[in-house]
Every structure is written in C-alpha cells, then in structure tokens.
Amino acid sequence: MDGMIRKFGVGTPAYPWDLVEHGAENFLDLAIDRIGANSVFTPVSYYMEEVSAFWWGGVMAGNEKLRRYFPEDGRLYIEPDERFYANLRVKPVRTKDPLLKDFDNLAALEKPCRDRGMKFDAWLPMFKNPFMARENPDLTPVDIFGGRQKHGLCPNNPNVRAYFRALVSNIVTKYNVSGLGLDKFGIEYWAGGPLGEGWYTSDEGGHRWAADIDPEFLLLQSPCFCPHCEKRARAWGYDWDAIKRTVERLASAFLKRDPSVVFELSKRGHFEGESGITRLLLEEEDVYEWMQFKIRTMAETAKELRALIRSIKPEVRMTIALDPPDRPNFQRFRHYGWMYGSSYKHLAPYADSIGIASGWSIEEKYYSGCKAIEAINGVCACNEDVHAVSPASPEHVVKQIQTYQKLGFKGFVIFGLTWAPPENLKAAKNELLRIERGM
Image 1 (cartoon, rainbow, N blue to C red):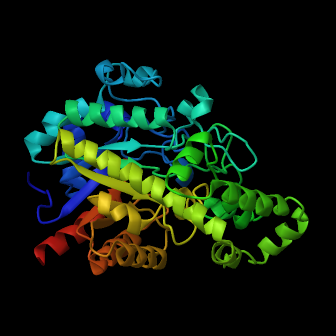
Image 2 (image 1 turned 180 degrees about the vertical axis):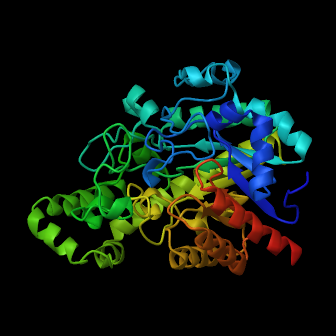
C-alpha cells in the first residue's frame, strides 16, 4: 500500500483495545499512514501494571474513545482451543472484560494483514504472570528463604512448561502468524506491588530503583529454589546443596546490616557501580554456578520452544524479548536481566531475533545496542524499540532511529502508535522514508 516502508522492517504494537476501537483494518491503515508500518505484533495476554500509557503517565492520544485502559493480567485475548489443554492441570483463562468479549485479536488481524502484505506476530508474555501465580501458588518461584514469589511462574516446573508448550502449539497451529515473540523471558523476580503492578516505590519518576534497595541482596534473594529447579540442577551436575548453603549464608548476612546506613550510602551513589555483585560472582564459586544454572534453564527453555514451533510451522520466527543483562533496566522492577537467567550469548542460538529494552537516553540505547551485538556476534538478529511516547520529542525519536541505523539494526519498532504524540510519529516516518530513499 501507498506509504508503507518496503526495504526494511517497521513494526508497532497492535493492542486488542485499540483494534476494538478502530477496527483491525482501520488500525492497520493508520499504522501504514502514520509510520509506514509493514508489520504489527499483538499481545496474547498482558500485564496489570502497564495500563494505558502506564508509567509515562499520559493517555492514549490515538484512541479517541478509550483514553486510558487497565488490562487484566495473565488472561488470554484469544479463544483457546481446548484440544491443546485437555490433559493439562493448568488451563488457560479467557479475558472477562466486556470490552473484549468474543473478540480474538489474532483472528481479527489475519485477513487484514494478508490483504495488505503485512506481517504480524503474536506477542506472548511468559513467566511474569501474577494472575496464574495467584491461581496456582505451587507453580511460583521459591526464594532462598522459602518464600513464594507470587507474581510469576517457575520455568522448571513441569506444569508451567506443559502449559506454555500447549499455548505455543495452539497459536502456531491455529493462526497464520509470521512470528512469535516471547516476552518476560526469565526466572521471575519482583520488587513491585503485591498484585504484580509496578512502581511500588518511586524515585526520580520511576526511572531508577528506590534508593534503599541493595542490589546484592536482590541477587541473592532472587529465585528459584523449588524442588523442580533442584531436580534439574542435580541432573545437570550442579552441587545444589553447596549453592543453597552459600546463597543462604550471604543473603542472611544482609539482614544483619543496619538498613539506615545502607539507605544513606545509596543516596550518595555508593551502589551505582555494583562492584559488590562482581565480587560475589568472582569470589563465590557457588553463586557463579547458580547464575550459570539459571542461564542454562532459560537457554534450554528457548531451545525446546523453538524446536516445537519448527515442528509445526518451520517458517514461523521466534523472538525473545530481554531486559539488558549489562545493567539495570529503566523499568525499575526489572533489575538486571541476567538475574533472571537472561544471556544474549546463550539465547542467541535458539532465537531468530532478540529484542532488548534499554533506557531513554541515546547514550544508553547506543551502549546497550553495542553490548547486545557483541554478545550475539551475528548468531541472530537484534532489535530495540524506538520510544515515540512522551516525554520523547520528535528530535529524540529521530536520534533513536539514526542510532539504530548506525548500529546496523535491520528493522525498527515504533512504540507505540496510539500512545505517541502525532508529531513524534510524523518525525519517525519522515526519517524512515529518508533512510529508505537512500538505500
């Protein structure tokens, strides 16, 4: 269609509430007109805390009737095919929102995308799932003190693995998707609110962790020590008893420290360099082995799911969305991607592409992009979002696109169509057209 970028990928999220508001055909035409999109990705479920423009604090400027939206966490927007879940203990639950009743966003996009020559991916949030965690507490990760982290699911739990195999099979078999994006792909740890919502504490507008959180303690308390993790670790040859003794000893030591002193030091930037975590990994062999176990857990999970997808439809691509392993994410509740078992290097062999989420500044985006490219080393593609939402300006949007082009990224994801100010979308499209004309 006229206005569509054709020489490289340009995508944007297509949320179910936007598709209901605009209609799938009109939404796609808007995406083509406003940013030259040639692909969209749409969530199969979502997260409670990311409401409307969530922590950007604005409204959905591109949705004329629904200015704000509060999604249910963990419930499906598609109609599950019960054949895939017949023998499972964990069953999918359909959304109960009257707005989305009888609406299947994947089905709604199939024909309009095909008619326009657009690709569309299913976006599948994985192990961060507070709803399923509350409904099935025995599926949740266990921290070193024996506490259940009731906001996510343990990827080593056989019932969890069976559920996601069934859901992936359902999606790839029933819908003509171009790809499947796996989001929140890690052994989940949470420092947000009790129901899975984010921004439980506030510091500098939500772009940094609250000052009184000691990152070394977060590392040591992060899960999982459930029986299923123990079984898998022992099968792989890890000394699980030694790992637990060391992690518990170190984590318990933090509880003896004066929290007021920790708080004062953090206000002076004492923890920004995170040298304490480096010491733990270099000097404590058991902690290092534990981190390697978590990384292997997620790599094996990715391997299994990719093999499943290829056994059904080899042409369907699999993308893994990660928070940066090299430092804290700008989303405070996702602190250090490697804490969850994320590793660009170890996941790259099992992904067709890896998406990274980094900070707002051009310097952060450039640095994270460089680190990701170095680690992936050409094994798969790499991409990063262009944040067009407030407080980004048109100039900032253009600089992001130029930075990603400089890094050699082959496509651009404009985030997001209905949240971003019109002038930002216009700036994005003009820059993308300029790049296309120069190719």
